Amino acid sequence: MKLVLAAISLALFMDSLVYGMIAPVVPYYADVIGASDLEIGIIFSAYPIVQLLTLMPVGALSDRYGRRPFIILGLIILIVSTIAFAISDNVPQLILTRGIQGLAASCTITAGLALVSEGVPSDRRGGTLAVATASQGAGIMAGPLFGGSLVDVGGYPFPFLVAAALTLIILTLTATALRGPRPKHLERDRCARTGHGEVLRDKTVLAIVLIVVIWGVGFGIIEPAYPLYLSEDFSATASMIGVFFTAMSIPSVLSQPFFGRLSDKIGRKRIVITASLLFSMLFSLMAMVDSFSLLLAVSALLGMSSGMLWAPSLPLMIESMTRRLGKGSAGIANGLYNSAWALGLAGGPLIFGLLVEPIGLEPISLVYSTIAAAIAVASIWLITECRG
Image 1: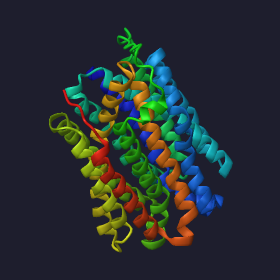
Image 2: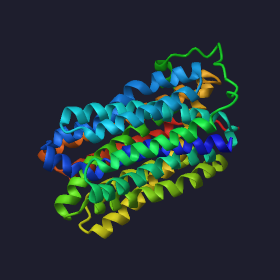
Image 3: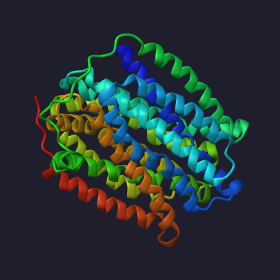
């Protein structure tokens, strides 16, 4: 299981690296291609929109046909789409290739996390899944710094071409690690033929979906908004923008294994709700600070709250869905969880693109924080956790 976990973690890291490295080149789209704020928002949204459309089908297919083919397919698609993204020179091409990257992530994330979750008992699931999701966080952390640094060195296409080469190496290593006898397939319980609408009537599942959607909206706003905000208000270079996102991502990565193991011991509900409230408060605070160093400090705390939320919420979703659908449903559980995340990521950039000029970043952040806090409070009554 350790070798499988390492292979999946590498694949997830690469997906997230490619996802995160776009942030420092946002000013390039505005200055060179002439993309408007709304067009930048659409470029960012293309990735999660395609994920939203494909995560659930991929999850269901991987439940039926196995995890390995989809993990390998995802990495192959990622290589091709990243090269295509590097040579795109207009907005429609960027939207198309960014969307194909979203399809690649749907395959790797859904099948990969399902494979990991099925390989461990429930009392170690939080800690083990947290290692895999921390690798996603590490990729998001490294992405902006990786992209910003390589753009400064070799120009716009360079970081994407380097990322494609690294993905090819990881594809080879992952295919080797996953070679051999297939893991025992967990067949879905015959009595658990519950539809997706029925699943969302489960209050715990509904609460997690709402929390993850609003959490995704927050990051969907941050990713296009703060590169422009930093560039305009702090005269930030691409490398400085990378530092900002890195400061946010490091605490997220480092905190996930701790909070995952803690949720195995004390339960997941209280950690999820506390993290949701903390994230909502820090989100609006980040838009109010007027010092770059203070902004880095607040973003670091925001990153920690994100790791605190991510680590227990995914296993809580898997366990709730398993009770509802039966064993062998980890793929569809991961699909629903990541669909909620993708929905938020798709909506966030569109909210930014439509509202930032009429009302500004700070009012958007205040309204967002109010809604996120309300969902967290409601979840106190919605979430029921069955342990043991």
